[in-house]
Length: 99
Image 1 (tube, rainbow, N blue to C red):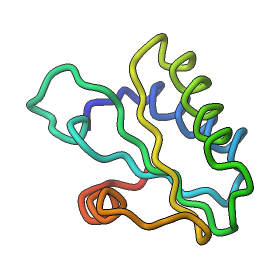
Image 2 (image 1 turned 180 degrees about the vertical axis):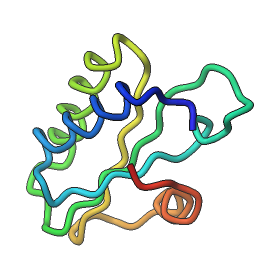
Image 3 (image 1 turned 90 degrees about the horizontal axis):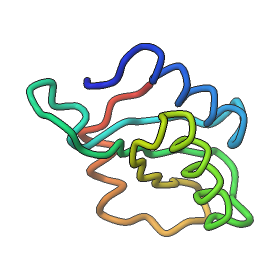
Image 4 (image 1 turned 90 degrees about the vertical axis):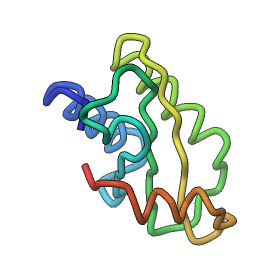
């Protein structure tokens, strides 16, 4: 996985602060390829409860994560009981790694 320990800690801290302690976090996509270079950080945040304002939560997570990672692009995907399950969720669940 192409994240430093400090980047991983920063991501975990932001997600915990914004989404709560019950949020589970997965990284998926190109950052899992140790031989790759560049690329954004693809994250899926799994929440056990319904999300009232998913767009606002996603935007807040993205903004805070980009700042915490000093401008690195971050894509945030939410998974919650009240949100539509899409094929990208299956990819993240199948190929992703818990942080």
